[in-house]
Amino acid sequence: MIQGTQNTDRTIQRPKRWWQRKSLWTLATVFLASAVFAYPSVNRWARTDRSIDSSRLRFATVVRGDLERDVTVEGRVVAAYHPTLFSPAPGLVQLAVQPGEVVERGQLLATIESPELTSRLNQERSALLSVGSELERRKLAARQLDLQNAQQVDLFAVRVASAERAMARAQRTFDEGVTGAADYERAQDALAVAQLELEHARRTVELDRERVAFEVHNQEQQVERQRLMTTELERQVNELTIRSPVAGLASRIDVQNRDAVVVGQALVAVVDLSVFEVEIGVPEGYAGEVAIGTPAFILVGGERLAGKVLRIAPEVEGSVVQGRVAFTMAPPQGLKQNQRVTTRLVLEARRDVLKVNRGPFLESGGGRQAYVVDNSVASPQRIEIGAVSVGEVEIVSGLEIGDRIILSDTARFAGADNVLIRN
Image (cartoon, rainbow, N blue to C red; front, top):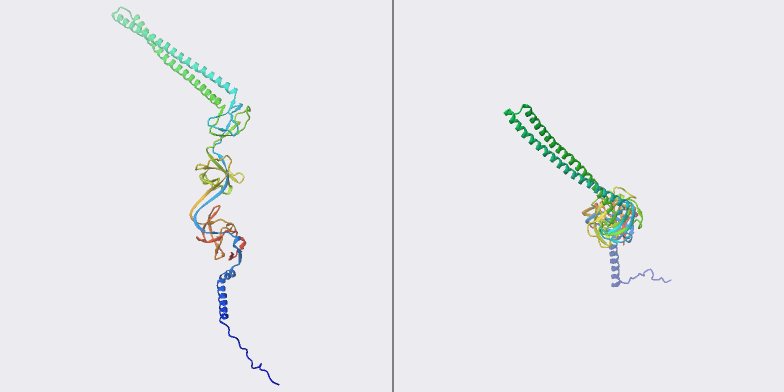
């Protein structure tokens, strides 16, 4: 049997061509390059606990600047001066304006017809004339009495002079021995009596003057009292004519024409449209930080106007504290009573601090933790916050300028140490 050649046969490999060798090197290079570039992503993926799509998150960067801690409240525009006029006396009211009518300062608004008050005024005026006449009568009587007393004093003075001359004659005749001692003594007595009468007349004049002056003064006081009563009644009668204390608008009429009114009943409310304020309701939690003079900004029709807190109520009503904000700059034209506006109260202003936008991370992290994003991986970082405003948070420590953090709620991370942020 003839044997085959299979035992001695060998496989001869064809030499590879140059372009085949080059393809192998290219594939190897691409594979190595892909491995190099993919290594960071693979490494991040390998060391993260969770991953989340970036479209589901909000981010912010830590910056340095000024921060104002504030609270935004709703308010309504009210006139700073809006008096309500009341009836000064009982009577019938006669209205002179209608609701919504523009009025000038001093313009007639209403009239109260009060016959009783008018009658009392006429009586008091008559009484004033009476006591005035009595005063003039007393003054005339005082002058007349003074004249009579002066006449009496002059008469007694003449008698004294006559007695003195008689005494001088009696002295000469007594010295010459013509008359006796009895005539001389009678002359002495006559002179003494005349002098005594003159002295008493002068004292009577002084007493009468004091008495008359007292009576006149008392009557003058009665006249003054009566004049004051008459003036007061005149004032009350004048107040029966109700006039506008300001230029503005008759906003409300509380009675009907020819209604019977009583003392103190509201008649007409007038609004001064030249000066406005904003009535606000501050939440109870912020009320302790709002004081008189607290800066405020009022947003009216897209315009930001400066103001300040004018007053704040001392009590809480319905979980809010009522207050008033005054404009510190001219408000725009066209403001209306009860117009709704937004007011921002600046509770505290901090200058040149680290800050970041406020977000749900503040509550979910308890204000002590934030997730910092570095190279698409978010890691928790302990932080310390300071002032917190409506839109921003002060960072005291734990973050630096340029740090990028997650503003969204981080509770979904369940405390993961590393979270991959997918693009």
